[in-house]
Amino acid sequence: MKTAAIALTAVLAAATLTASAAPIKINWEDGKLDAWSAVDEKDLGDKGPSNWVIAAGPIDGKALNQTSNIWGDATDTVAIGTFFIYNAAEFVSFTLDADVVAQDNDGVGIVWAYKSPEEHYRMFMMLDASNPPNGEKGPWRKLEKRLGPGTGSKLPFYDKPMDINKGEAYSQGAKMHWRLEVNAGEFKFALDGKDVLKGKDTTYSKGKIGFQLYAESNIFIDNIAIEDLGLAVSPAGRLASAWADLKR
Image 1 (tube, helix red, strand yellow):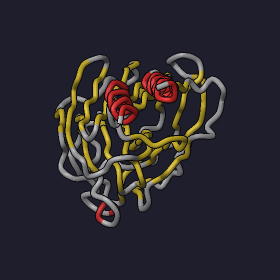
Image 2: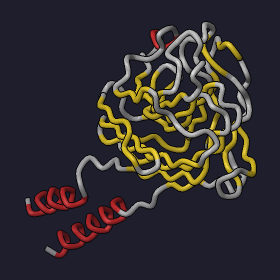
Image 3: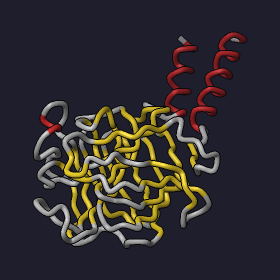
């Protein structure tokens, strides 16, 4: 019994640590971009390149800033452009919070389950009522799935939206708070504390998190917090299972 008690104590400690893991917090004050990389789409109308930097911004000290107007597929039908991807971890279920100021008026969003430009989900918002000129002009907000390797490299790039807010996007120049919740293939996006988009899809699972822009030449992203919700079972479930194994 002494051995079983020691083993159960170890399980308790591990479960407690897993359940209380602190969110990843990024505020850019250290000036480092080491864990991130820029990925620009191919065959764009404006090839860029993108210019992701850390700069003093309108939110809270230093922020992530992108200054290039890189935009659109060659026909400028779909709002694509550049990604900025967090490479330090991959996630299945998580929450992502960020403060954002978009001083331009074009396309901004979040990507997740990211493996490549051809394989990911996105929450994307378009404000400009004239962009993209050959596609669905803004304003709108959408949850979408990229079509995958091969098919995702050409029109229409993304599958039909899982959810869409037509006529609504964001307020140019105003600070906004983004919150994305992803839980085992269920998605929910809140803007300034209000749930505005939701969807469900299980085509893609584990992957990286990042941001995506279309013709958005002056955006600031700050106060990022990522919380991993990736436990397959709750700590209580882990303990019950472990205790049953020990008793056997």
